[in-house]
Length: 193
Image (cartoon, rainbow, N blue to C red; front, side):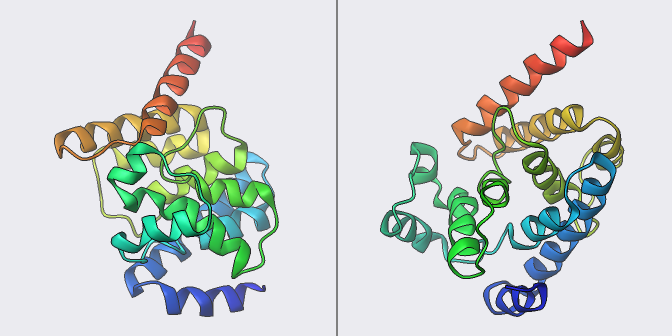
C-alpha cells in the first residue's frame, strides 16, 4: 500500500487529533532516522501506522486480540488499551500490506518499549513521545534534544517520566515498561562507568 492509501485508511480509522499525531510521528521518525542512520522510508511507515488501532473501543481491543491469536499479558488484560500496539502491527500487516518484521515490531512496542530495542524500535518509541503536536509535558525540550544526541539516554528519560506519571495516576503499568526501564537504566550505568 502506498502512503496516500495509508492516509485514506487512517482517516477512516482515527480521530482527527490522532490522525494529526500520526503524521507528526511519521515526520519526527523520518528526521530521527536520517540523523541516526536508519532507513527513512521504514521509519516513516512505522511512524505513520503506529497508532492505527488506537481508536478501536477499549472494550473491543481484548476481544480482537484474542480472536486474532495475539498474546495478551496480565497487564494488557487489566488495561486492554495497552493492546493497541500489538493490534496496530496486526492491522498494518493485514490491512496495509506491511510485511517488514522490523516495522511491525516497532509498531508493537511503541508504547511499552522493550529491552534491547532495534534502532527502528527506539526511533518509533521516542518519536511517539516527542512529535511536534504533543502537548508540553515535563522536561520535553530536554528530551527532544536527547532524541537527536543520545537515544538510549532519551529512552531512559521517557521511561522514567512515563512510570512516574502512571504511578501518580494509579494506572495499570505494563510489566514490559518496567522491564525496559530496568534494562536501559542498567545500560546507562554501564556506559557512564
